[in-house]
Image 1 (cartoon, rainbow, N blue to C red):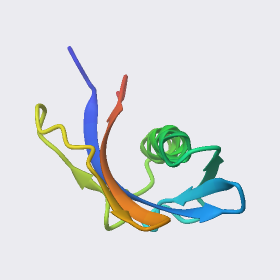
Image 2 (spheres, one colour):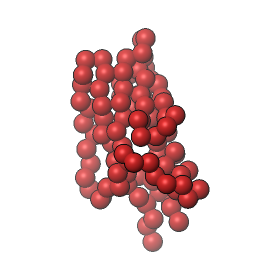
Image 3 (cartoon, one colour):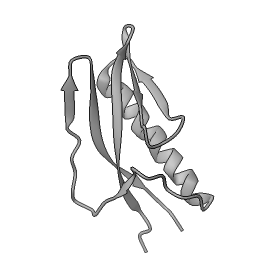
Image 4 (cartoon, rainbow, N blue to C red):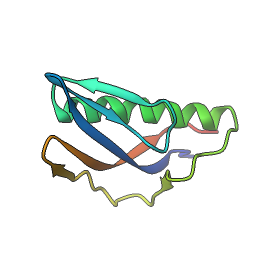
Length: 97
């Protein structure tokens, strides 16, 4: 039986010196960095996946702003706002019992 869950999160990013800073407003304390926008967003997504997996494992509530999604609704468009922007990404959190 497949126990994978999909969630949609919003990742904000902004230029930070020579690199980029990315964070998820719905997940308190989740901040990541990268040399490029894409790297910062990818790092934040991986941290968000681990964060949500830990919440589920410890039977903690999923914060408001994190949406459960149906499979097959992929969308990872980056909305550029100069040196900052927002990304909507799907996360697959696997092996949840």
